[in-house]
Length: 292
Image 1 (cartoon, rainbow, N blue to C red):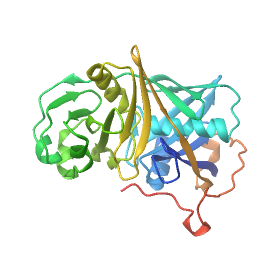
Image 2 (cartoon, helix red, strand yellow):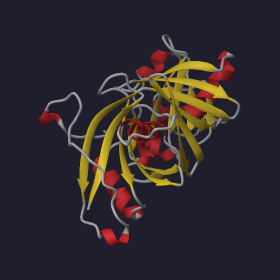
Image 3 (tube, one colour):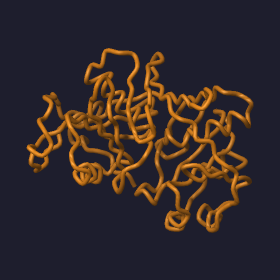
Image 4 (tube, helix red, strand yellow):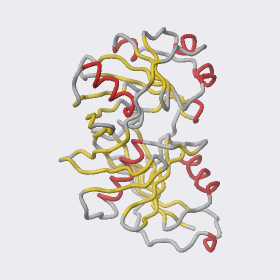
């Protein structure tokens, strides 16, 4: 069985920036263990799979170890594939997901996610967080993730977490954040429980970050930067109980997955054309990034 695969750098201005995501369009859903095996083989923070259904697209995301309920950068990547490679002709894409309907639309050279806000609730710093991060936050909040708030961008950029200790904290992961120097706020995101020690750029984390900083800075339109090694830039706008998260995307790889699978169990394959080429890199460099 052959399946198309695309790798897109999301929240990136240039190749090798932002967060790489794999995208696999499907005609029908394959068994979960097959989807998980593909994501594990890709070894990226997320692999997105979608199936077209009645004018919208059912969308799911898998890390190398498990399925997740919400992922921003892989949703942005899936929208890029539809707009740029599948020739989607509309101006707005609707994805149906575990987190409800998610919209993606064009704004000039940006793609914008319309995601549910997930404000954090103030909480005590959990046992083990200070030791795991090697620093003491001045505030801590709990939503889908813990969010630890610090005083300066330098604290965020120089942080060297103990990922083994972070696993004991539970939840999906830990966001660390502080006011920015060249952006309104900065962050990093750690999720070793989901097989991702540090995620390069995390769109869904900004569902918690944006409401917090909107209130703290008394503004609803903000610039954000994630300070991973790859770095990534985002625009965030809080609109009621929604967060609009914008960024650019860069195509890196188009290819074909070949797996041994009884196609009769999963329906027929859509006829996709793929060229097995990586954009802007030499042929001997045409390989997928491994998530460390």
